[in-house]
Length: 228
Image (tube, rainbow, N blue to C red; front, side, top):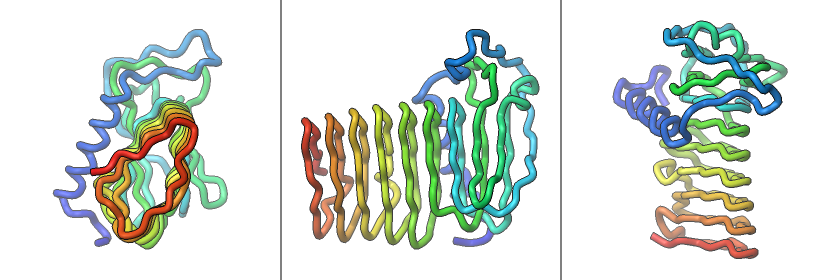
């Protein structure tokens, strides 16, 4: 993918992020605190320092927009009184995005925009939403805790784990081969062209955007596959 994404691609990714955030509804603070901070009415964009990272993990009611870029960057868009609660820490090769106590309550999405040329793994949990755009050899995504991920682009090898009433809408992310693991009422849409393998269990629903040339998916516990 080019060092700077074309304006059209950036616009598509922004729309995906907004759609994901609105689908999941209003953000809220961690349940550990009985008095989350009410978000102010202003909006501020803050650039965060970030070293190199290849893994992104988001835990909490935040909206992530992740794209490929030549230089790693992290920005947070939120009311000024919420910004200090959104933590973006790099440990080793992982960028951890979390919400500090006492959390926040906001009717509008709090958005974290991330670019990196090396990200190969993304994890969403705790009610996070996310929009992903990639064009690379391999990508691993994990979606849990009632989170939602939408994706566009292409990969040679895609590995997807979806758990706990979460959703992975990856019908616009073209994969040569894909491996799926879904359970606990999870929903996933996959576009694997050549081969699809994996397991779905416990009421999970797997929707195929296309029928792959080869498919070997174990279906148990009331799970089902929806064909195109």
